[in-house]
Image 1 (cartoon, rainbow, N blue to C red):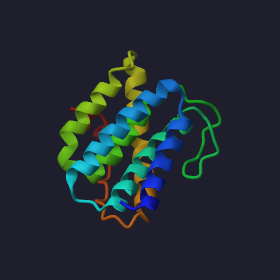
Image 2: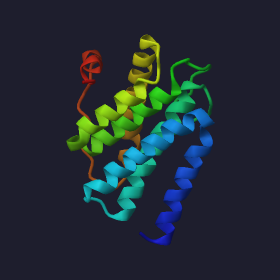
Image 3: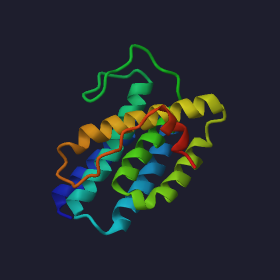
Length: 170
């Protein structure tokens, strides 16, 4: 990995970590570790492609948190006029999960288990499921936007309907 690529990756990670509060730093750090393990463990990317996937995961998490909390303006998503009240941590985890599963469907079982652990931190079942659905939808939108010019061979997401949300979790 060249110095320029390493600097880009470190800068991206630092920017994302500065976006969230200390509480959110845990979920972002956790999913950064999961993403790094998934991306580098596959052995199928060159270094610059690894950093691109990591940046996509981090962008999905930070944009999802900003969307949920009504922070803006976003360059990628429409920002709601007021905070939505979902769990930013759960939504960010669901967005990261979606992006990673699109790139690594062979790791879906491991990623599903990691998402379940993240979602278990939200005690209210309604808030947990709403956050998961919102995060998955935002992850889907961001994946489509970010992968359209990535230069990385991506698998197009299949069309989803409302019933798929309930079936997407183990």
